[in-house]
Length: 228
Image (cartoon, rainbow, N blue to C red; front, side, top):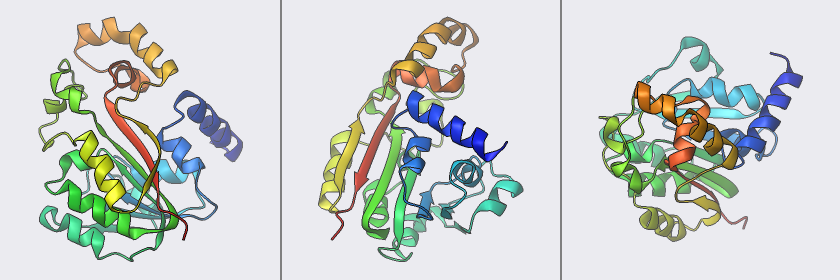
């Protein structure tokens, strides 16, 4: 895919999902230093597809759905033991990153408050934090393959508490720029509504994240460390 096609696709994704991962990447300064916490599912390749200029550091506890091609695109890749996850992040360069991404990571952590504190500490002044995790209400959602009910994923520990996460960010000196406790981007939610009958019949979540948008499965936060 050419760079022009990538730019068009990025613009389309920002329009459809204005608080999404691609929109966040596009908001970063040129050559931004990015820390991706919980970087499975070929996340290095996804990030570099839309922002090949960034310096990408990925941190995880295992090679979860990774590919050698994706890992080759990471400028730095670090595996930590689960029990050392928070302390390992805290041991990284304090105040060194322009952005920290944590997509569907907090719900897997045994010490989410410590992980939030560690991620916040790695941000440089003016740095941005992107948090996405299943909403608290998802414990009562229908069961679907692909995860709609929180407990569909056996590796989940507990749903992050929305109020506690916001409080933790404030305590760590970050300001919330955008937030949605149950994120329902309208276009994706419409796709979810159209595909919901098929999703119910097959027992699988529908395409393009539409089912998640319909139910408001994700909690989304953009936060920033003050630039001083």
